[in-house]
Length: 271
Ligand SMILES: Cc1cc2nc3c(=O)[nH]c(=O)nc-3n(C[C@H](O)[C@H](O)[C@H](O)COP(=O)(O)O)c2cc1C
Image (cartoon, rainbow, N blue to C red; front, side, top):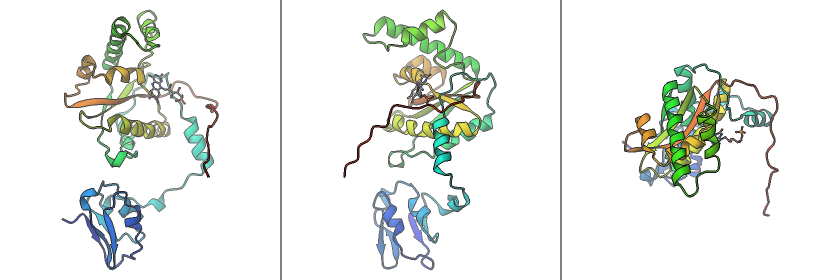
């Protein structure tokens, strides 16, 4: 089957499909677009989505699977700014579990984030079991202790986290979150971490609309990115895969009252 099909009776030959194609797949001819380099198609779906007369179809991104954009309200910039700026990293969670269908709704949004050459390539593990999360913290603490003993340059914060856990019984690694979501990718997939950053940025923002809070689990990631075996075994990560990111998720215990500022904007224009 051909990659691209064009409905000749409705195609207005505007050329938008070939203009927006990121990889030079399409060329405009007298009768409309044709795929001159079909193997270059990265399945981004732009050609189908931009066509003003729904005349082009692509087997990698079928027209039938694309929704009409006009039916969505456009949010104004003030609302968008407040929405983006009011997301905070949540480190105190209610003890309540998040329903599985909500976790699924949350993680589903992650696959719509932009990725290099539309490579995507991620899959997810959602931990619902409190005991498994406690074991994960214990494993990361043991790894930190090992780093403090044997590494020449352990991270500056490790001794504090170990002390919090061992002496204070406080988990400052996974923060007693009721869930963590792990992103994983095949071992030989080069864009795993980069794509995860993009995917989790979507996930963290969308979480707020479901009444959820989240926090990137960077300390956990330091251990996971070294393929620390006890951690991979705990989550049944197969040898063929690696963890590319981790984020805590749950219902926030507290509501924030202010929107924080950041470092001043540093920007230059070059005319
Ligand atoms: C890659 C990454 C790793 C992070 N790791 C941790 C972490 O291990 N523990 C934690 O409490 N917060 C972690 N954070 C949250 C940051 O501290 C937080 O984003 C930053 O302080 C800004 O605060 P805000 O997210 O509430 O706006 C991480 C954030 C990112 C992006």
